[in-house]
Length: 55
Image (cartoon, rainbow, N blue to C red; front, side):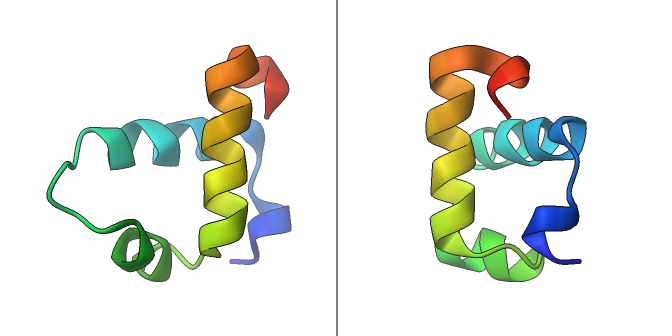
């Protein structure tokens, strides 16, 4: 799944899932979910700044 094909609800789910997994490295999480680290970091920042609407 390409990161630009993921809808905002899916992005929010992944952000929340990652944050509930403190022992998982971001790079491993992103690889397992077929998302680039850069894109995922961007989603986390956007989510922190504006919630679901920002995604």
